[in-house]
Image (cartoon, rainbow, N blue to C red; front, side, top):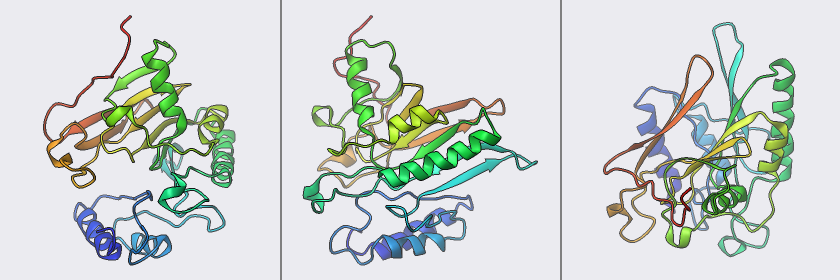
Length: 263
């Protein structure tokens, strides 16, 4: 599906529309590889046409495609939970794959924090979630601190099962996580990208979570490796608390954290 991505996008939307439940994608780094039928702009137009899709292009002057907010509100239109959708882009400035993974750019960060600041003025206790593809560098930083016994990092669930405890992070410095900590509104971040990682932990007041996947093509033999397969259920309760849990498709999910020191 990498080359004929238009065909696959239409198949995906037809599948998602069949559930008659609102949905939205966020862009990753394989949606429009070199040689694919259409680029992000055309894919964005396709995603907007889904019957139950709530995807929008977002502000066109920003880096990436699909930077927007979804505001979950109550019956009185009071905002209960902003959902921040961000394009973490594809590869760096110095070429395609060989340029290394990209990150959420500063103009996107500025826009995001401005929107959250405006919400914070109206709702001082507002808490938000952010969804994007590639993990921030601080996810790996937190994991390594946790393994060394740093009690400020709280383990929630899942594991790091990529070879050599791999995190597909950018070599470029990004400001998104630090700005989110400073801003104080985003309390949950969700990413994908690393096919076998399912880790969720809390660092500096933000819970970072790898979503589970249904991937069966990325690596040789991955279809027989069950620890990553499934979904991630996010439940916001009436009192404002949030529960995040894994919903495995098959076998019990590993909770092994390699090298974790016992108290």
